[in-house]
Length: 336
Image 1 (tube, rainbow, N blue to C red):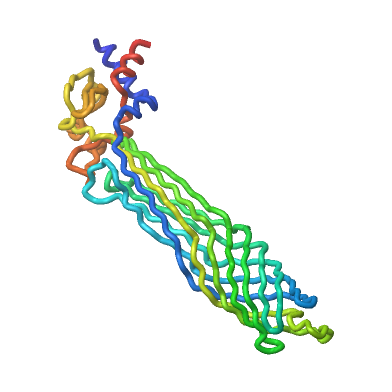
Image 2: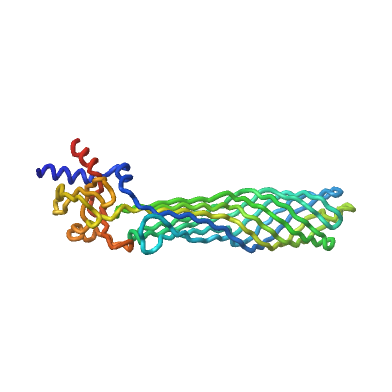
């Protein structure tokens, strides 16, 4: 009999398979949310135009600063009966971007209508955090990532020569810097419990600007080519977009409290006198082999977790050097 009890304790400490974990009837809360942002911006531009009759074509580079920063919280919903909500927080930011573009347009006297497109580049930052301390003390996640991205831009605008050397323009741009993603997870032996998070920032946004530039007209400029020459200037405007999405999940197995168990039977004791029991939860017919939280509280109080979730006791199996098994798996292991 003593040998059988020793084998039982050893097999219990071996661990449990993913199929056993799936049978634990995890209670799960999940949540998904998204947001975008609007920001003012300002920047500088420089370029050079050539003109042939009514056709104007050229190259332009610009750089702009802004604060396109969506921030939001996500409240999880589900089957875990908590007294305080589980909340995940995410934010992303595009603080600057630049473009190098070609342009081509049609001019009629002092008015120019044009299309533009080319390379876009900028920095996209993304961060997310999730705390489940309401379930298990210390169970938190925090992750962040950032990347300099290269993408593309298309747009168009209207220009006006208010004087031979002063260019005014109104311009629209659609910018795509691509996506930045993150994901992380954490687990605890308490319960057991596990949490995860994922977030994505789609660095796509739209811009409308009004600008003014000084046109350096070449001395050799041909008659009838008022748009030809190099120019520098500045612009202000607004940007909107940078759609950001985040998803969160928290799962916890039922507590180890004796008040939630039935059909309890002792199957052995460890060397320190802690009992191993087979039992069913009140809502399940699956038979498990484990400990009773009230007994653990007397022998190993440091392995007990009292959560704000409810007044039931939970056991940190890791502190006991044990892992949970179903009775069926325990018996199969005992036969080997």
